Image (cartoon, rainbow, N blue to C red; front, side):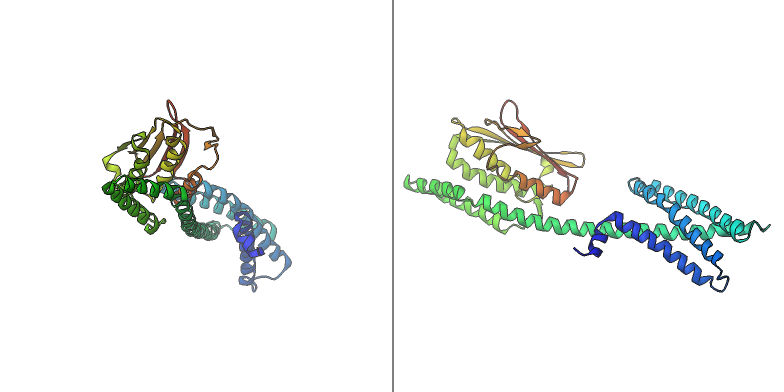
Length: 354
């Protein structure tokens, strides 16, 4: 990594570099602009002293503006304007002291408006500093959003690859095809044909659907029903599925195939290990501006450490969390907890979008 890349990737180094270069440039431009006025060392000293005072006084603005950006727009504007005026006023006083006490050796004019003019000039300079600061911050925010979008795209494709590995694993296909073969041997041709049709539709959705785009929960539930109908042929009465989907959730947008790994997880680690079978409960509801999704089973459960399942060959949980983080940054929740009286419950909270 080059030094320039290290500079722009570190906010601290970038700030102090631009801050120092900016005030050095101010001193240079000020000196060039007043070259005909005075070239004595004392005048150069005054310019450097004023630039250093400006450098020092504008440092606190960085931390004030950082806090102001977290407030409401109106409050942010008030804080920014007042902060700029106070800093400009203090800087104007410092410049007046430097000019009249050091450069003029104590001589002061009687015209008060010269002091006011100096304040206006200081305010313009501080305003330029503020505009540059917010301009750079907004540019960084835009770049970060582009990076997040690119990361989300990359993570979605990676998640899609993992998803296909899970969905098209030999065990799933073998069990499904074996069930179809058994149905054919038992002359249950209608059921076998329906199962082949469901498997075809499910695989087509898995392969053709773009993992970057979000789909309606209603469409996602439709595909999940296909998947569970395929699994029900294997487990027969041992698999009981309870749906609790609020009507207003059907149009909510969710990442494609976000719930299927959770259901597969429940079937693999809960239903298949229970002699008399078990139940999977799937619910969806809205709460304020959020969509709450819930997948629970009544299986034997598992050990949970730090909010993660502690067992080997878990399917898709890390995948799901990575996708949610890439798509929603911090505006989501993903938790794994013990179900009552037994089993595992996985809860998801994402923004409600239609």
